[in-house]
Image 1 (spheres, rainbow over the protein chains, first blue to last red):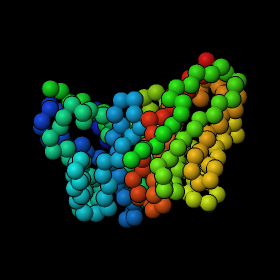
Image 2: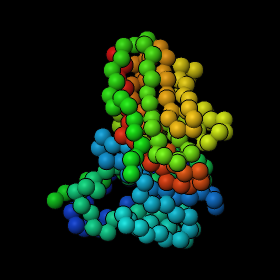
Image 3: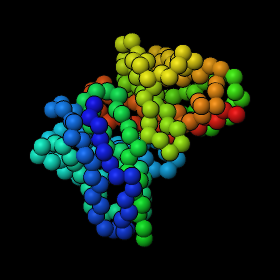
Length: 108
Length: 114
């Protein structure tokens, strides 16, 4: 498993893009980069994952650096509902290791 | 469709009592995981079931903790002789049988040991 480093917290204004960074300098060639988020009083929710190429889905985009030592989760237009803890995980196994994540605050 | 269901949503128990937590995974998901989350912390992996294979129990913190999965579906996590440090939210997740398949989590059982 890759050790990941994320800022403890970030703040964004509603309807603006948000870029959530993650460093994973020890990532191996087979470790996927996973992102989950956890809203208050809920279990984590899958957001996106990728290996080398940038990935897009209906929730977000994942930009992976060419050397794979870092990645950025992009929320194109933050809403109040996006306020959550965002977890970045570098793993190739079946049991993902969640750290403390980044707490995202979205202000109107 | 129905997501992962956990019961009870809240459980308060006295120190020394045994508790059972239940997880109903998404139908057709062969992988099932238990995690726990203490206040303000990340998730701690406890145990993993995959189909009929022997479970990976490497995350269980002590022999007071055990889990079983009957018929490849419902799972119960049992904590014997509960201690105050067992107080946490216990989360269950299920997934398809492929590595890197997204995990689907329930909303957890909040366990308080008094």
